[in-house]
Length: 147
Image (cartoon, rainbow, N blue to C red; front, side, top):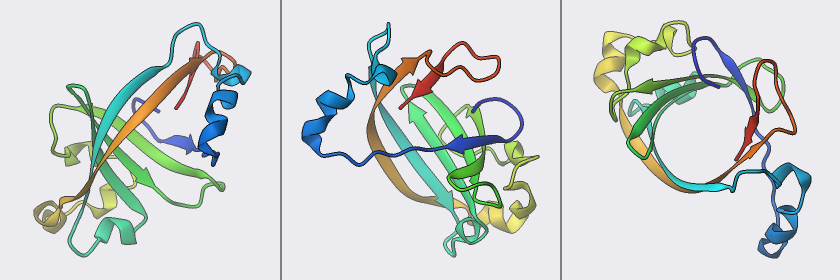
């Protein structure tokens, strides 16, 4: 989900009892040549005090992984169930770059007023395990990533 243009995100969540995690890791999907990587992701979500983005079905997030920042714009829309538009771009720092909203679901909402009112609303810290797998290979990609 990188680069220019909208991407669709398909998110699958599993609800499992903690003692079944070891068994899940024996599934072929999680058996890879590379060891899984653990990482900490710190995400800050931005909106106005009156939640203008949320009310319009848009999410604006800046995520830090190590020393790298990624801005993500997500849109809930008229896509299929479990899917949404997503635009993800590397940025220089921890503040959103609204110039990158061009061509996204956020673009029609960006005004001088929104720029003044936009602020961080909350932060999340997540420990994530990333599994690389070559079981499913989307068009033109050598491997997919499962988190």
